[in-house]
Length: 159
Ligand SMILES: [Zn+2]
Image 1 (cartoon, rainbow, N blue to C red):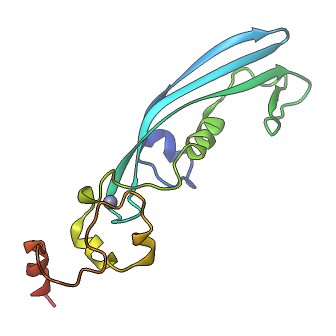
Image 2 (tube, rainbow, N blue to C red):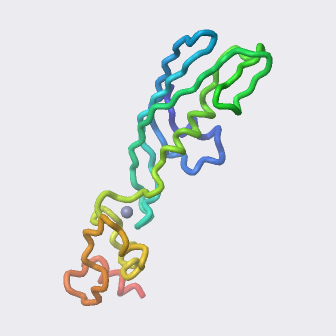
Image 3 (cartoon, protein in one colour):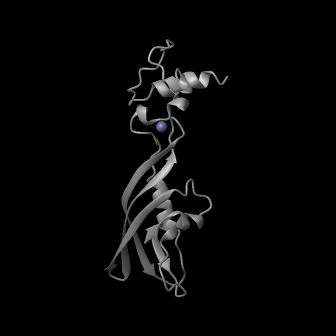
């Protein structure tokens, strides 16, 4: 199953539609039940927490869903029950939820240097920024103009 922005168009509440990937489903009979193993590999494009520029986040996970046949359809429980009217198994809703579950809570460029410097300059001295464990930045508390990005000087002139 291909997951792309078309797939996400059917879920208007999505945090992002910039998710692409491939989902694979392996079905195993487990007595009277169906054991669905779903693997997903792909990537999402989300705004970086630090500079708000797009950052590509790799996502891959494996999930499992047990499905049984029954009198009435119930897809709310951990084990799904499909009623007689169901002739196919639609995994798009759980897939959508899993993808969002597996999105990291912190989305950052791997290195400070990859962040948009015109934006991160504004963050100097921001406590949220200085707690960054990846902090390779030497900009905190540095109000001297040495080593300043020449593009920043150009921006100053725009004030
Ligand atoms: Zn960034």
